[in-house]
Length: 107
Image (cartoon, helix red, strand yellow):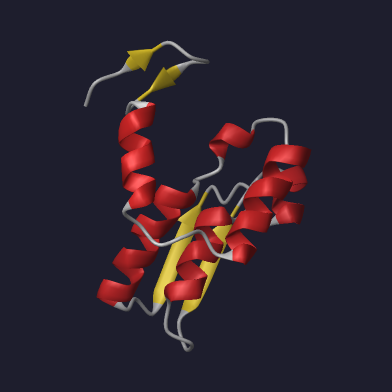
């Protein structure tokens, strides 16, 4: 993977590749969109949010594997947790751990 050291920091992908990937996946749900927006408006380091592509990838893995227990360490505002929760079986459990009370309250 190539690093692009320009435009506000280091990126593991080029914006064009990310835009292509976004166009090939399902749209972000309203619930995830609202959490994304809230995080960017209210949290100090919103770039730590997993985001749509990572959330879609995690959702796909959950739908494929049907885990009964998921443990997430470092929940931040809960985007990845919510993406996985929306895809997991109803009887499954999701356990999250976040040490920062500011973002844990949002999650």
